[in-house]
Length: 259
Length: 247
Image (cartoon, rainbow over all chains, first blue to last red; front, side):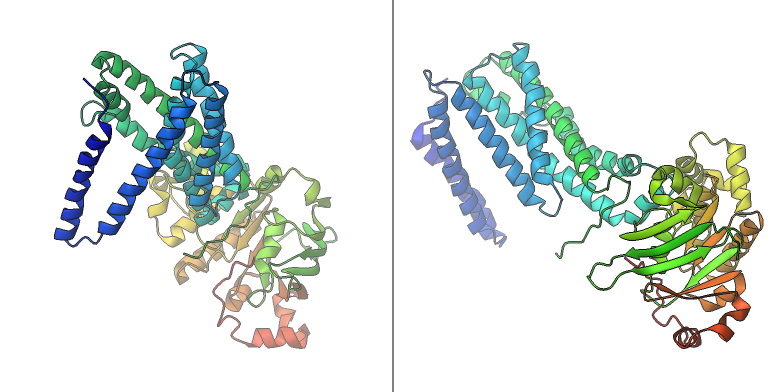
């Protein structure tokens, strides 16, 4: 199968956006502009990324460019996390740390044990999967820990007043936040293959790879995502909680942001 | 008052959110080793803050708080908080059964020990299996008291503990406090209710603007009160007495 759909193929597929636009107009959903804007934006962003990847992944290019790509991705992802939850104190450095550790652990296993070869073609997409899939969960856990400890301050102080350490007093709330962030990923992992075919595998099959090979890669990718989500959410959850207490086990003052 | 106090505050200052309006302002006070000391005062006088510096949920910006002669700043804070139990204005049951609530305070507590503590708070053993968050307000507050007693505190801080309760529950908790103080646990009780003060106090401390305005036995309070305290006592005192959490 020829996996190159060409620019004309892309243009034809864009006609599918017209179906969504038509439904929106027919049902008076009022999202036509947003639909059009997001479709165009996605296309432009991906084409730009494609051009950049074309440069980074060129055969003679130094792998240093891939590492640079990875560093930039961590920076942008951390910035995105911070922008989505600005009232959570210290989230930017925490997200930077969490993504770095998560990449170090998962890439360390996959590349260190030579599951995948260490080259630009594995490094860049794998890092994208790891960071991209952890992003939403990282935002969720940061916000949730902050809001729980702010809204349940009375309960937390009652725990402290019983002589619990800050860490013990925060634990039920941190645990519940990490659990909520992990559950969607666990559910997705359970449903894979039955309810939907995941992106990496679909892409590989469309590109002409043997389905069994594609499945093996997909399973490895799912495990990577699970590990990276668990790592980033734990680091961010525990880190945010830590910043909300003083060293002598008091709750720092938390203000409710005006909505 | 005892020669050796349980708590001693020496020139304690706790700054407020706004500069120039401290929550406690150069406050000095000696809290006796026995009985119930009731702290009253208008909203924003620093009553809750006074309690919170006793177990270091708040820390003074200057001055010293001593427990049995020892500067609390030099004590291990977690050990201090187990010696100085606190019951809050709003009941704070944790999710889970009453047994699990008590276990937060004292892991490994046996059912017999737990039942004994509940009995001190006039709750029977059957409460152990009940979800703490589904109890009535009065029962929740007694569970919170029981939870605090599970740490075997030497002193109790009660921060307007009846403000969320109905009258029968309020009287029940007051009787309980009297019994505990009779067992030798001194209580520092913040109240916005002057009738309650008259019912339970062995000693009254009136706070105004973060300072001690008067310390007296209830019977002598009005007769010896300075004019501003007399005005406060004469007022209904808490038209605004929603039991603020002064911070």
